[in-house]
Length: 443
Image (cartoon, rainbow, N blue to C red; front, top):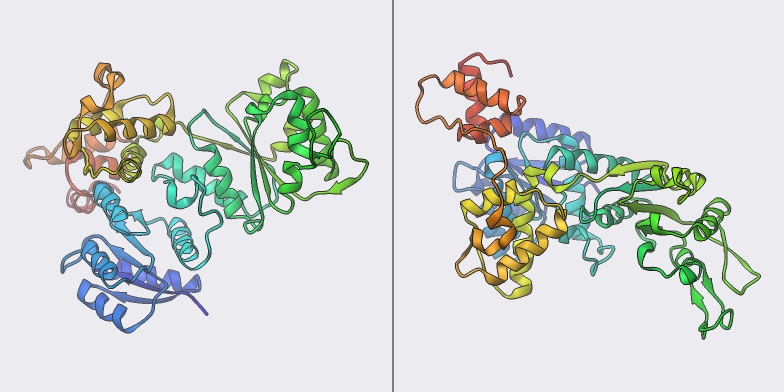
């Protein structure tokens, strides 16, 4: 039976386009242009998900979401919002929305979010307790994030070995989990090994297991990571830390798809998909003789490069609000958000520790904050000492004099990025498009 969707959107042209496209993708689709009409449809019918614009003629999408949750209806609810309304989208997530998507909507991204929302609602989660499950992590909306997760969705269904390259704190293990969850092995084990924390003498045992009495301290049989991950995914974090001897053993296991426990003569067939991660330059390690080139090519059929947080400036406040929500729950606090000065500081900071540092910073600030909003002083000394980074010059449209020139300058400063230009000009994206048409500025 085809999954059913309700689209709540007052732009009839856009609504019709979405309905037509989603029907071609196998969905049953109903539309409503007002919140009141949506309520009637939801009361009379069963839908698998709701896709609602934030702004509607009668009240807004938030009101519809609140009504649904008051009715004890936990149907997946995805909010569509403009770039300038990201804070509203974050609020919607906190109040029970499943996800949100920015306008202009990218069809493939929308399809991915709808499928994930429906799957997460009606199927048992793969790993409820994982700190890196989709419910406990944001992927972001920046161009760098879009590109990364587009590659994730492409490589996940394949059997290719993936090497995730990125600095500490960028979310490499989450990406590994996501590849597994979107793969054909999703219902099989996901086993993670931190190669940097394994003592050299125990590495072979961790990977392949051992039998009782095979060496001093082997008081019982042990199942290794390869056997535990059989049929599923084995994730090797900081793979560059493996000793040369273990690299040889790992290469053999990957080539032959067989392992032998320490102290055993019996070989065990294994079928694992390998995902590795590193913050090192493995090519440089190869040139120095510290990493085997043949192993590098075996684990690196497809490379994913993790962007640093400073390369994802559009995502910083999204993650900050997300981590604030987590910290509120963990610390039993009820802070609302960040004041304007703090938002500016968060976005201008270089974040050498990436997402991990941002999470720790927000958690600390949540603990020490004395008001409903986190202030600059709550972030700690690093932020109160920093020099503001270079920012775009404000081009807010306070009057209509020379308006066209301001718009052209904003587009030039943002490399023709309409969303960023709208923010600079202090208007929403729809208003910007109307002004582009008014002044015959090419779109």
